[in-house]
Length: 405
Image (cartoon, rainbow, N blue to C red):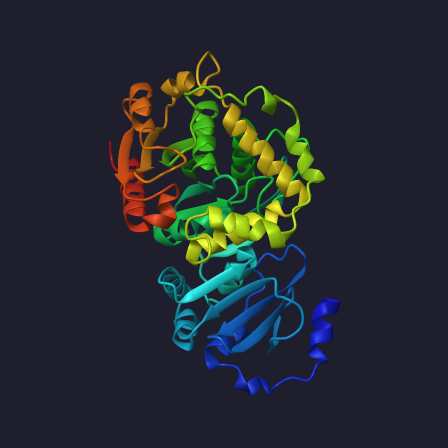
C-alpha cells in the first residue's frame, strides 16, 4: 500500500459499520486479478448521493474501505442507494443504471470500471477483466469480456477503450469482445517519434492479435478506429473476418489548405505546450455536446487524462495531423485503395454527424458497391448515442458470418 493510503488510515474515522451494505458487499468480493493498476495502487471514491463517501484503497493484493478523506481520488463513482444495490446485484445492472443517468463515473474510467469488474463476484470464463501486456509496439492496455469468436473494438481520436463499454455489454453474450487503447492513448505506452498513422495503428492491432493468439477477428471501429480497421482489412485481410465501421474517418475530398503547414513536425510542440487543467477542462467540455454529463462527461475525462500529459498531447496532435493529411487519390490514396477491401463491411452513419458527414456514403458506395449501410439519427459516436440500433445491426451482420454457406 502506498504512503498516501497508509496516511489516510491513521486519520480519525467514522465507524466503518456505517458503510452501506451494497458497498460493503462489493468490497468483500473484490478480486485483484480482474483490475489493472498502472501505478500499483489506486483510490476509488464511492459516493452515495451527495453526502456519504467511502474510499476503496486498492492495491495488487486487495482493497480496504475507509471513509472518504484526503486528496482527490483517482476514480469516482456516485449513485443513490438503489443504484448501488443494483450494482451489487449484477455489475451489468450497474451499467444499465449508468446509461440511465443513475450512476456517475468520473476521472479515470480505466480504474472506475475496473473496480466494478473486480467487485462483480463473477468467476466464470468470459467475465469482464482489465489487463495490460508488452508487445512489439510497446505496452497495450485492454479490457475484454465474453467467449466465442473474437471481436476487437478500435476507438476514435482522443478516446479510449472505455468508449466501447456499451458494445462490450451488448455483444459479450455471444462473442469474446476486446477493446484496447491504441499506442499514445489511455493506459497504453505513448512513444515519441511513432508515426501515429493508420498503418502504425493497424500494426498495433496485429501485435495485439499475435499476443492473444488470435488468427482472425471481427473489427468494430469508430472514427479514427474505423480508418484503422479499413487499413488492417487492406494490409492483412487474412486476419479480418467482418468489419463494422461506425462513422469512420475517411480521407478528405476537398482541398486541404493547411496541408503545407502540417508537414512540419508541429506535434512535438506538445512536449512544451502549457496545458493547465483549469483552462483546458472548460474549453473541451464546451466544445463537446453534453460534455458535462453521462458518457460525454466521462469521455472528456478520458481525453484530458492523456492530453494533459506531454506525450499524450504529442500523440493526439500527430494522429490528428495524419488524419488530415490522409491522401484521398492516387496509387496510395484511400479512395483508390478502398476498392480492393476484401472483408465484408457495414458502414453506420450518423445523420447529425458534424465530423464525418453522411454525404460520404455515396462516395463509399461508388468505391465499394458491396458494402452495407445504415443511417441513424445520431452524431459521431453511434455506439454511445444510438446503442440499441447500432449493436443490433452489428450483431446481425457478424452473425451472418457463422451461417452455413
